[in-house]
Structures are given as structure tokens and as C-alpha cells.
Image (cartoon, rainbow, N blue to C red; front, side, top):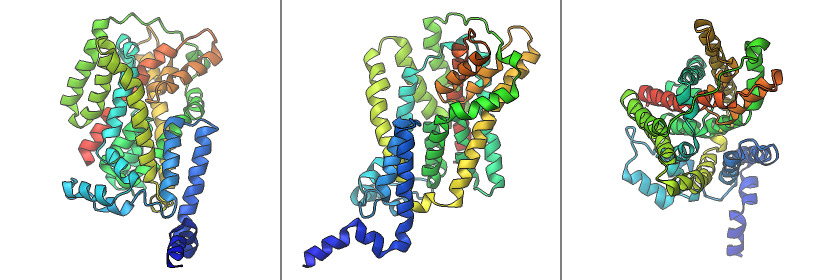
Length: 399
């Protein structure tokens, strides 16, 4: 009988109903995880990561599983650094998700994903049209405007910087920055970042149409020049060196991005390139999604701060989109020859390649024979670099 009663007390049903005042938040989080699973599976909102995040959220909020222990991470950092004792305690007392979360805490997962992204990225449109770099940089304005807005809303500087990075529309960068600056907000920021990345086709077109005329949306751009193999090989090396000297804290992300790209463009590491594009990306995506989802406990998610993060995420994304479009219009005023179609400026947010496809789609609504995709890929890949550099700046200022 004692064994039977002990079994009953260990069931999730007993733990919920015996302490409902503390458990109702977990039940709400389970419902939210089911909603996110629906969005990932049925609506296909960034399913590769959102599905893992949602299931990690489900696992961490199921009562009695012991898979994630937020209390182990509360005093994890001492004077800004984790010591061996901290990791030893995690390995000895933590659950499965605690151990997987070490890869997030140490920022290993985002950097590995950037290697895969680099191996799949073609920087030729950016090299062929250097103006694209300016458009990618302009789209990062949303990050810094949102940072200022979050300061006025009462967020600490490190938290405001973590929220602002949502405007870069780059999930791994948002996770990387938040893990370093303000890990308490990792769950809400990751959910917001990937949700808005999935909503690019919904959020961007109204802003693009509001800020441009029909004539501007019909501008045709000259074909891009052919980029040589030498240029493609030299580009990642030069960018890595330049960024390392300019913003050393951005080097882990940019360096991994450029390493993956160098594997691709060199043509001598085909096996490594394919592994980075497929096996490495898939494995890390699994670990990253589940472990980030594990941080979305009721205590960290069900509060007013989460609502503010969701609202400011939209603001960041909207301002980033508008900034790219407006800079393209300004460039056309300053250099009337070889005008840029302002629609490609919206692709400066680094949701690759979805933002570039949105530029193409909106452009063809006005002129079905106008092809903007390759032109939009320039600012799009520039946005990946830009968001990583912006993250490095924020980490250097507030890390």
C-alpha cells in the first residue's frame, strides 16, 4: 500500500490537483504549447524550429517530469562567468533539457547554425551590387529604435537590447544575443522572433505599399554582373577580418557564417559543405528548439513583460522594413541613374530567403514581368551580416 500511495503521489494528476494554486500556470503553458504546435504543423509557421520550441515548452511544463530545473540556472553565473562547479551541478542534478540547454547557454548552437547558413548562402548578389550592403544596414535601424523604446518602457538596458534584436528577423542571432545579455527572457524572445519570421509575408507588404508609389514599385533594375569565383572566395575572408577588427564580439557569429560560406565557394570541401547544410543544421536545430522551449516556464512567460516583448517585436520588425525601403528611395534621389526598386530595401531584414521572395511578389503584383528576386537577395544576405554586427555592438555595450 505504501508503494501504491507513493506511485499516486508521483503522478502529474496528483501534483496538479494537490497544489492547483501553483500549477494553473503550467496548464496555461501547456495550452500555449499546443497552440504553437498547431501553428507550426498546420499553418507551417517556421516549423523547423517552432515545432521544437513548442514541444520543449510542453515538456518543461508537464508536472513531475524533472526534465528542466529553472532554479539550477538562477545562480549559474558568478561575476559574469560560469565556473566548472556550475556545470558540474547541472550535469549531476539536471534533467535532459538542462543538459541540452548548456549548448544554448554557451552560445554553441547559434554559431553552429550560422555555419550551416553560410554553407547555403550565395553572396554573389551582394558582391555584384555593393549598394545592397547599405540597405541591409538600414534595416537594422529597427533594432536600435526598439532598444530605445524598451528603455522608456522600463526594461533594463541588457533586456532592451535583447528585445530589439528581434527586429533583425534572425532567430539564431536573437537567441545568441539574449543568451549572453538577458537569458531570463530567452523563451519569450525566441518565440516572438520565430513567429514574426514566419509572418514576414503578412507584416511586410502593407508597409512596403504604404511607403512606395506604383511607379516606384515598377522600377526595373539592370541585370547583375557575373561575380568571379575569386571574388566569392576572397569575400568571406575579408568580411571576417574586417568585422573582427571593428566589432570583435560579433566574430563568433560572422566568423562561423563566413567559414560555412568559404567551404561552399572554395569547392574543395564538398563533403563538409553538404554536412553543414544538412546533418549539422538538422541536429543543431533539434537541440536548439527543444532546449529554448524548455526555458518557457510559467514564471518566465506568463507576465506583462512577455506581452511587451510581443508588441515591441512587431515594432522592431516594422521599423526595420520601413528603414530599408526609405533608404532605397533616398539613394534614388541622390543617384538618379540606375535607380533601385525600393521594394528590395525591405529584404534587408535577414529572414532569408523569405523577405526577398516578398519583394519579388509585391513587385510582380504591379508588373508581372519584373523579376526582383536576385536583386533582393543582395540586401537579404547583407541583413544576415548586419544583424550579427548589430548583436555584437549591443553585446559590447551591455554584455
